[in-house]
Length: 318
Image (cartoon, rainbow, N blue to C red; front, side):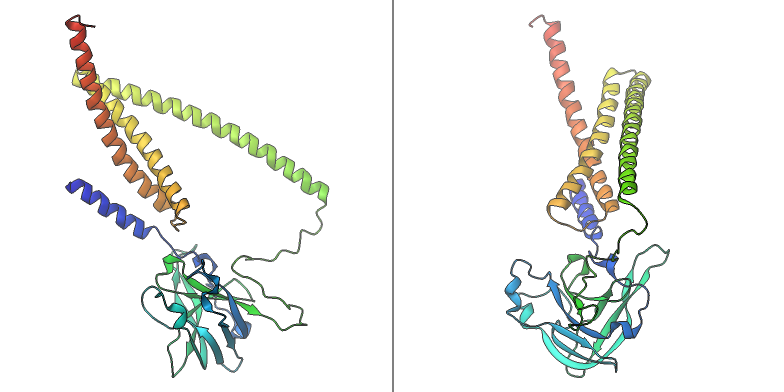
């Protein structure tokens, strides 16, 4: 029971550490120019209550950032600690004041040290508005209010609006388009077709080579398991010890593979935001333990069955 409790505690800690902010890869880590942030932003979508899009009850959510450093905000979330309450949309506030550009946190990127997240603070004498993360790598940027634990994915996403008649008279969603491609100039359709065909053949060859290598590794691993089991049985002068070593090795390998697959399937079905390293760590650890336990149980049953059959053969009752 103590071992089971420790395993459950370890699994809980791993699950808590495997989540991450689903918008972290979109946050702006290079300081933007304040003039690129000036403009009006309207609510693109909210993930607090996605099953009920009408939860806002028609409330317009708007943020206007002016060039003189002032702002006008309508129906934006207050700065609170904890998960959004059931009456969250009734707590939205509208106010005016001054805005400033500053860092709102850090995110792990390609550098050894975490990258700063740039955001906007809406300062008001009457209310305390939640800080805003900036999203995108270039203008026009988006704005993100993260609500509660960032790993939960609950947020309000704002996109910049443009005045009708301007070259950009439509909002751009920085949360789905990191870059806007204007095509591939100078490349003909024939060349594109040739590249696609070449890529297809390269993929086929790569799959074939991978299959051959995987088959070879499987054979080598299988021979290694068998030979090590035979050696262990010979060393202990007991065939039962050799079989036990064989079952434990097979159980460990199968358990790790099944554990990783099960965790991956659960995270996909539950829409949990776990990074691949944590899926492998959690699935491999739990699968290894379950595989070893299953191998020990199978070895016990195998030993009992073999003993029973041996006794039956000895007494000529078969």
